[in-house]
Image 1 (cartoon, rainbow, N blue to C red):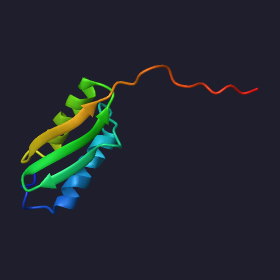
Image 2 (cartoon, rainbow, N blue to C red):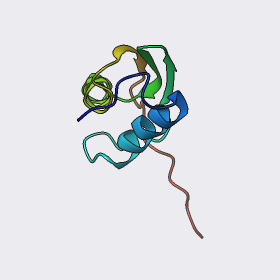
Image 3 (cartoon, one colour):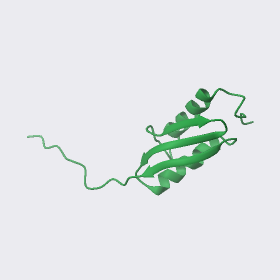
Image 4 (cartoon, one colour):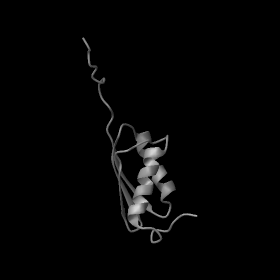
Length: 88
């Protein structure tokens, strides 16, 4: 049974969404912001791929099915090679 928007304080709904984003192996994101206003949830942040962006929105829809999800997550591909530190 899913919680209705008025059944649970918004801060608990936000935390539930953040926990799911951090723990779900498809997503594993710690740096996504979640804001709830009434029956709308806004997600913001940056991820390296469009697939990650969509997986985040899908997961939030699953966790908060009674909310309208507004996905403002941007795709910022990782460019270049990571710096390698040389130990001499």
